[in-house]
Length: 258
Image (cartoon, rainbow, N blue to C red; front, top):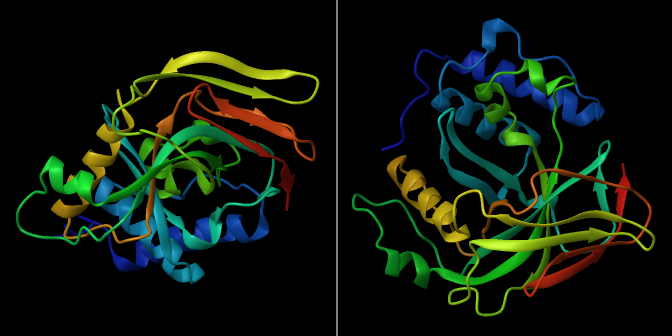
C-alpha cells in the first residue's frame, strides 16, 4: 500500500504545493521552501508533487524517472497539458532540454500485491520514442535547495516533447548513444554518452516496481522518460534546432518563451 508522508501534515503539503504553483503561474523562479514546510523525506516530496498537480487541475500524462542515487529516488509526474508533439515548444524562461528515450504504455499496469515480471512489463509497452525533456526549475537559486526540495518541484520537469518512434528499441543497444544538437550555424552539443541508469529500460522497470510498491501504477497512454544522454543542455530560442540521437532518430523543433 502507498506510504504516508511521515511527520508531514496535509497543511504543510498544501503550503509547499502553493509555493511552487505561485512560481509556475508567475513564470518567475522564487526562493527555496520555507523551513516550516520543507520536506523531511521522499514520501513528503512525492505528496507535494501530487498536490501541486491536483491544485493546478492537471492530469498525469507521463513520468520522468531514473534509478535512485545516493541522495534518493528520482521520479516525477508530467502533466498531460505539458506533453507536446508540435513545435514551437514553450518555456517559462530560458530553454533547457535533455535528449532521452521514453516508453509509451500499451496497457495498464495497475497496482497489485505481487511484483510484475520483466515479461509483463515489456508486454505493457507499445513503443519507444526519442523525446526531449523540457527542463525548468521553480527555484531562483537551485543550488541552495535540498535534494528533497528539488524532488518536490517535480525534479526540474516542465514538460516533454515527443519525437519519432525508436525502431527496434527492444533489440538494439541503447546503453550508450551519440547526441548532437545543432543550429543552422553552430554546434551546441556533440558527444557520445552512456545512459545514466545503464539502459532506458532499467529506469522504466524501476519506476514500475516503485509505483507498485506504493499502491500506484501506470495506465495505457502514459509516457515514461528515462534519463538524458547529454545531461542538461541550454538551447537558443526562436531559431530552428536539430536534435539527433545518432542512428536512432532526429527531432527538428524551435523553442520559444512564454
